[in-house]
Image (tube, rainbow, N blue to C red; front, side):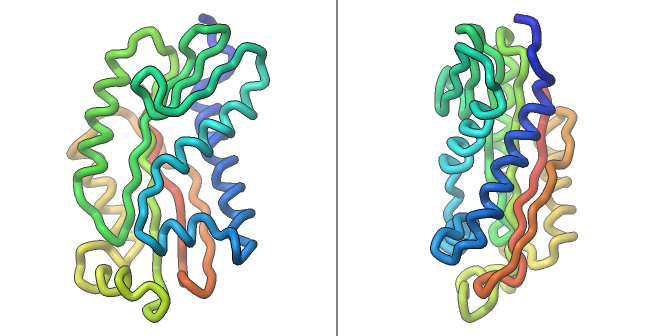
Length: 198
């Protein structure tokens, strides 16, 4: 199938649209999605999958578009006129607990994507959350960062991510745009990441 739009541009636009929704929801104290999932320490991979899928469906305004989650063995799968068009795998890495697991999982997912030769646009997505919690509000995370199980410094966190990426994934990557916010729970709360194009 001839490419209808640039796959990389489409994926980045879908992620940016998801980030805008997060920023909008963070303005409502009763609906602060990123604050709430970060405060609980949950990865909430499924929430990100569904939101990115939803944005892809909105951006692809063609007839006979199917956008699914957990279809064809991929986190996100898009077909147009019943032909495979795009697939993506997502992992989450947080500064309060940094380990190789998400990168090792993404490496396995990338191998799975590479084996899917009929899909023209394939991506690995590593979403990175950076949180600087107020001690009294998220004590467990504050203590964990002080114990060095994570990285309280954003520059140290980014350096560690890039080391993990170089050690685990050989594919070309680009930085995703980052959103930043703060509130009574977090002095800083950021969401960015990396896009791996296969």
